[in-house]
Length: 176
Ligand code: ATP
Ligand code: MG
Image (cartoon, rainbow, N blue to C red; front, side, top):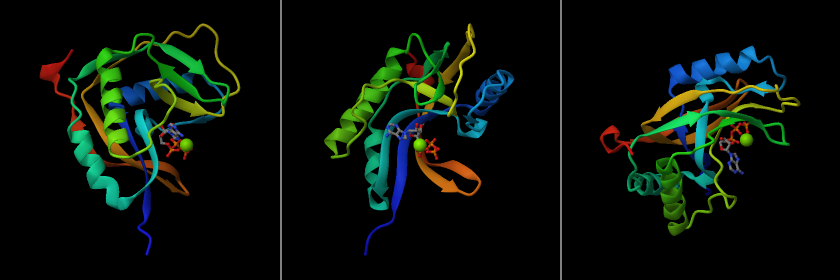
């Protein structure tokens, strides 16, 4: 019998108040494309794809060993890739974010997972299938990242939903 699989990823969940502010700002730009719902805004740290349900405990335990302090992240650039993915990113990603991604990647590799090989480009997806970019738009959104989560990505007729399987605090007392 095969174990059911889950589509998994680690990410920083965007705090709801900030997510709403970002979504409102994006909507006011009146772009084309398919917007991401405010409740779904996140910054992916590691994408795992389809994994057996039985490996979730292992993922939880390796993530528990990854520790950085909370960090301030300023999203200050709007970009659109050739595939139409409209996103916010940071001109100066904080070292703690890069460190957290590296720790997770190493732990995943050590446990035999196959995380993304491409270099990490921290971004928050705002919309997909966009065909144009507004000129001269300079965003400034400040995010205090104080947790990261393991999500399962689920599809239903209502759209994609990310369900939190576990999350871990990034300690404010250790902020760098
Ligand atoms: P949907 O695919 O249903 O339109 P989605 O892309 O948000 O929505 P998933 O495909 O489950 O949902 O992806 C979850 C997260 O992982 C998203 O942040 C997505 O950008 C990222 N992701 C998906 N595929 C990859 C990949 N091959 N490499 C890196 N990150 C990925
Ligand atoms: Mg996808």
